[in-house]
Each structure stands twice: as C-alpha cells, then as structure tokens.
Length: 340
Ligand code: AHM
Ligand code: MG
Image 1 (tube, rainbow, N blue to C red):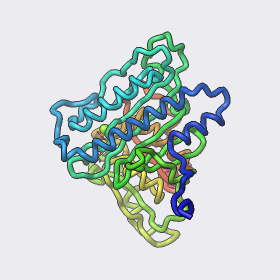
Image 2 (image 1 turned 90 degrees about the vertical axis):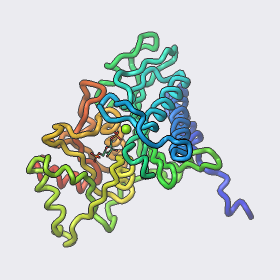
Image 3 (image 1 turned 30 degrees about the horizontal axis):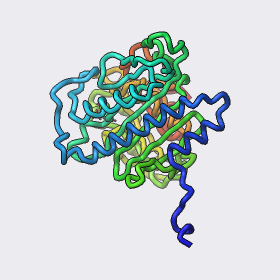
C-alpha cells in the first residue's frame, strides 16, 4: 500500500513542540509560542537567502553593526525579520541581536522570554553562495512581565538558557534544537513549509574515520605560542593511528559546527594579539553552540580551559575565545594547557 512508501506520521516542529509541552510539568504553552515564532523566522530567512541574488540582496548595505562589522543587505533584512517576528509573538520581552547595539524591549503584557540571536551568521560568505546560518539562545525572564526588561535579564550564566538552536541555510535548511534534554535535528520540507524531525537524539560520533580541526589558520601570526604548538602537533601523525588531523574551515560558524556535530572534531576561534577574546560573541554564538554541543555529548571551553556555560557576560556583545567539539579533541586542548 501507498502508506508503506509515504510516511504519513511524520513529526513536524509544531508537533514536536506540542508533545514536549504535554510532557512538561506546569506547562503554560508560552514556550510553544516562542519556538513557533522562531521556526517562522528561520523559514522566512531561508526563503530570503535562497532568492538573495535574484532579488538583488547581495552586497553591502553601507553601515556597520554593534561590533563594527560592515553590514550586508541580508544582515539588515535578517535582523528586521527577527525583530518583527519576535515582536508579534507577544511572548518575547527582550531581543538581543548582533546587528543592534542596544537590546530591544517589546511592549507586551505577556513577555516572559529573552531571545538573543545572530540573525545571519557568516554573512561574509553570502555573496559566494556559501552556507550561512542563524544562531539563537533563549532565556526565561524571572522579573514580572509588568516590569520593563533590562540587560540584567540576559547578563546571566549560560546555565540559565532554557533552549538554544541554530538554522543552517545549506543545500537543505537544517535546524538543530536543544531544550536541555538532548539535541534534535529537523530538515525544512519546502513544499510542506514545515521543519520535519529527521535526526532525533543527535550525538557527536566517537568513531568517525576522519579527525578534523577547524580554525582560521590565517591568524597564526597573531596566536600565542601555545596555540601555535597545539595546532602544529595536530598536523603530525597522531600516536594512536599514525594519521594527522584534516583541516576543514568554511568560515560560517553554523556550517563548521554542523559538520562538527555530524562528523566530530574540534572547532576553535582562539584569542590573539589582535583580540584577546577572539571574535565570537558569548551571548548569541558561544552560549548556544556550547549548550547544543554539550547536550550532544561534546565540550566547549575558552582559551583558559573554563567551561563556556560557566561564564557570565558583562555586556551584551561580549566576545569569547572558544574551543568546541568532540570531548576527545577538547580534552586534548585541555591537556595541552595543563587543565586536565
Ligand atoms: P559574523 O557574525 O559577522 O558573520 O562573524 C562570525 C563568523 C563566524 O560565522 C565564523 O566562524 C567567523 O566569523 C569567521 O571569522 P574569520 O573570517 O575571522 O575566520
Ligand atoms: Mg552575523
């Protein structure tokens, strides 16, 4: 019968969220609202990224963002999509966006969530048609909805996150989501207009045939000696298998992390003489990726070997150095710096 060939009982993101909500004690339903709003934002951005060249969205917008990067037209559009989607959800009180210097407070009587995001991450890749992504961390706000939101609502430890996810706009659009009980992977079915659960309970592999490191080696001259010697050693035959590590670097964090989740390996953006805390932002790049990777069985630390999730930002756009990926490879770095 046809039903044997076509699965009519697929789990969409909406169904997944409703089922999670049913399992949760004291569920209010507001969690579903914010996750549905995020799903819509990802679909909207995916649709826009796909058409970027056709509708003249490649190239620079002509301004710089909060961290001084030149904004692309798609950066600005992705930011607008996020602002409008989160504002209309009525459940998000605060939005921190890489593209906005100040946090955005929404007028809402029900707002109990703070969303921190990089709407289009890896935007230097856009014009070449290389994958970009969106990264999001989600915090539950503890102050009453009647009080105006403030920076303290998000300047919190990474352990306070209630959810984290990224969307990768690649050959397909992938969504990786953690609600703190493992990681689930979804793929966007563009005909259905729904994210479908395709990789339940994602775990980093421990037996992938290739050992991979991922770092911008063009920065070698700015690195500390210890970082240089660490990567030099990876390029030498390793004790166990006599094979050196392979290098892979897309330059879009979401793409580099998605490969790390599927194949294992180490992704690093270390501090350097140019920037002590590297390049990546703690609140909406380091935290969500660390949460996802830990939930998938990996590890994430900074240059000093401190766990990323233990950190607390002092400003919303704080940067952090990062070493993230398979436990085996992060442990190798920790041993190298004498922290294991
Ligand atoms: P962006 O948020 O301005 O796009 O910058 C973040 C991106 C990451 O996706 C990527 O890993 C990194 O910057 C690459 O930086 P570099 O070009 O210095 O290697
Ligand atoms: Mg960005």
